[in-house]
Amino acid sequence: VMNYSLEAASKLLQKRGEWDKVSELYTGFVKDKPDHPTVVSALYWIGKAKAREGKIDEAKQLAADTIKKYIADPHRDAVEQLITQLAQLCVKKKQVVAGDAVPGSGTGTSARPETAAPATAAPPAITDPGAELDRLLSSAANEESPTAKARIVFAKAELARLRRQPAEEKKNIAEIATQFKPEDLSPFLLGEAGDYLLGEGKFDQAAGFYQRLLDDFPKSQMIDYAYNGLGELAYQKKDYQKALRYFNDGTEKIAALSKLKDISLGRAKTLLALGKLDEAQKAFEQVASVREWRGEATAYSVYSLGQIAARRGKWAEANAYYQRVYVGYQKFLPWVAKAYLGSAESFEKLGKTQEATNTYRELLRNEKLANFSEAVEARKRLEALGQG
Image (cartoon, rainbow, N blue to C red; front, side):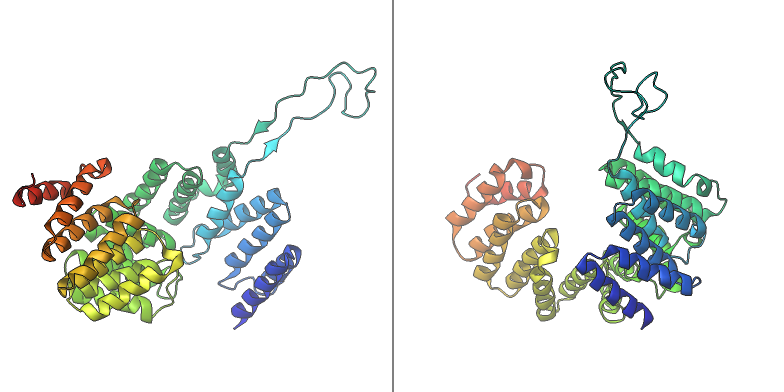
């Protein structure tokens, strides 16, 4: 109740733009409850308030000091939030202008303009974000704790992400996933490491990180990484009943935050794999209807609604879904390619051979789809229709 009240008061003050009072609110909380589990989150908000007030250097130092204090404790799962904040503050462009003293005058104010020698303004120096982050976290970098070391690597990954250096970001996340044990990591890093390994197809290794998160941090805000990851692993292994249990738990047992979209989509595709068409349709419609999730998840969902209609033999309805994908979601090429094939097949089932032929040819004219397996299938279908 206390945390809810604190958050509600903070939101009201933020809405009013009263960031000085936000800072006072959380400062009072930290003073009264210095050992409370959410103290790190409170310090994050104090730093954010200072930054909004233009006190960037104070915000940086507060974040750095807090990180260094708690960096070796994996149970303080807001430390990564502070690391991200510090990286963001370091990346913000800030010019460090050289002193404006006139040469030979001793100070910048004693020389008179009419008698002073003309000065050449020194170009402003830009602080390198990487060097500044290293400086602020220098003592923490010498920590022997594996948790601390992993978090330092994460700081580098975050800096790379913010500087739009995806290869460097991936390299650092890979280091966390492969050079540290699950017991070394905080909830957030367990989730990140698990997701990296899942994406690399290293399922058994990924399972260890997700299971550690589920077993040791059941009340963490990052617990949805575990439900989604373990559900996806079961799905990939075609253990659909097990996958459905994890995805259902991820929507019913917890209030999923970071992974709600993924869990919802995972549940929908698992229901489809189990042949539960009515439930799958409702689940995909729900994903497709969420405006904030617009993107690949929408394309996947609309395509899947086409598959459901096709399984029911409703070919005109299926075709409408497929066409919606390749017309409205052209950015997501894998689903566009699948949708073209689905649409052409629907036309064939409806006895509209010319329309099917046109659709196959339209797929083949799209140069972006040339290397997809669906292009090979389209050529085969055209030959079968005598149109090769």
